[in-house]
Image 1 (cartoon, rainbow, N blue to C red):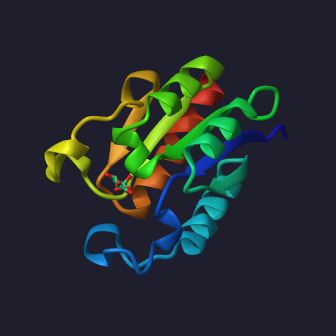
Image 2 (image 1 turned 180 degrees about the vertical axis):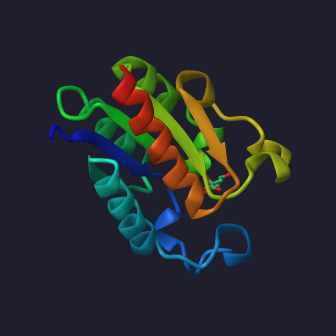
Length: 148
Ligand code: DQA
């Protein structure tokens, strides 16, 4: 059985999940989220490469590195969602199906979180369901890739 290969990117401050504003982001650590993602990927017959970085350029480089390696990208760009033209341009440049996820509902929060630079270059966005946002995003991405 051919496995889909997917890059999972976590942006800045997500390494602190578990201790970081648990009322907003929940109590799971990033390792726990990654374990749940790996278990879901197994069911979906996908293989995940997972990277967290607090550095914009490292995330840009990882997106460039996707070509020839991965079929799709699942990304929680954290605060770079609201600031980074570079991440948006990188996603547009590699032109791989990408799903944007957020633990919190960014539209219920401060105004500056209501705009996503990357939303226009992704297939879709899932926001507000905690860790389920990641799992639903992975399901949506693998479903999309299995049709293409
Ligand atoms: C986030 C929402 C962003 O606004 C914030 O900067 C984050 C996490 C989320 O998953 O809810 O770091 O992407």
